[in-house]
Image (tube, rainbow, N blue to C red; front, side):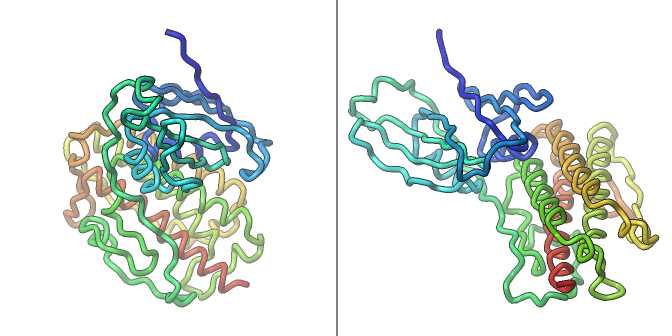
Length: 326
């Protein structure tokens, strides 16, 4: 059988892979600057081009033929893909919609209309299953810039509650999508730090409130710690994880002297490290337990959700610190 495979240019391979994983693709092979992904029987290649023009100038794209365009549209939209054109019956016998990836590569996704001229061209496939929508994590408009945070994060995560300070409802996202979401959120946090004024990013709004850079250093370290803990929980029976004194790691003062670019790079690297650890988790592993201080129980799923909350919550904290510094 002869097939064609689209090769799409992307500006940041890690970020692009995370986006495609979110909408349902899986990584088959990952090289330096190049990835091969799959979705059911379809194959897609991504080629990293750091000098790629902005998304609005992209002229690349691909067409995906499926059995149920509405089901795929609902799934991709729930995972954050924009709708360029909604599902609509076309005169050539295809019901299709249009979207684009983070680099502006256009995707048209179509399914044959029953009895239409294209009906016989597409094999009978099972539509994609429905997935939980990705959470909205924007800072609430009614929160003051220096909003205090005094919440039981363990309860927020383990019970799937909504965090009043960052807006994340952790239980809304399917466990299998957490790794990709962490990578996307860490990328957004890195962009926030990279584009901020180098002086403003180091300003503490109050003596007891961290600067945006200190929040970035904390999240960088948190991602590495939780990646290692998840690997331990996979490898050991109910390990005791101990306690990491994250406050002391910041209060020595050196975090605020860090190079911003290095912190941004490490954020992406550690997010990828955690995502790779979560790739090893099977459906039967999410409930594997570990113990933290005071007998606090943390399954692999709770650890993953805790790490996601750390990234989202402290991105909001960093935004507030930057707002106070301006």
